[in-house]
Image (cartoon, rainbow, N blue to C red; front, side):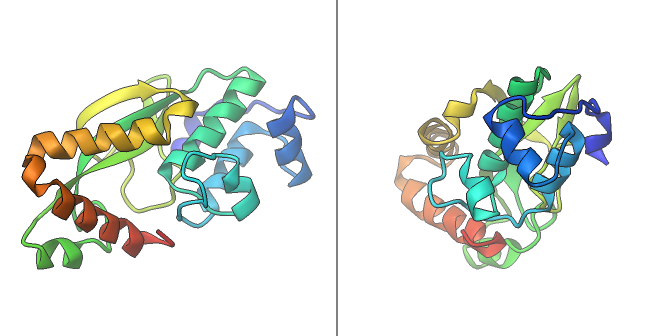
Length: 185
């Protein structure tokens, strides 16, 4: 499992996030990662609010990984948060194939957040494909504060360049339907 490459750093009342995880009975970094990974996939009320993962007991790739990145920073672990674009299809994202097929597409570019630690990609989303298995068309390191508007704009610009501006609305709507099929949307 990807979490095994992470340091087994214990924490107790180290900061706000450390205390929040301590209240859940979690006292080490890998356990916090497993907890977040096991939460259901689904957008929080505010897609830029990574603390919503703990309040709403669910999260997307953006919020789950931003939460863990923030915890890592608080306890002194150097973990990077990445945004990558991959070709989402049924093979790497089970549940989207029918939607794509009905639209006459085999795939659509999708933005995905994940972590990197010492060259290892780590995905806590809880979906089938892991970043290690995905072929990214683009990757860029981002900050926790960039999981909202920056991520959406980055993704939308990529789609406009990939398909052209005239196709953007159709492709974005299709992408939203795919994401909704994966969880609570």
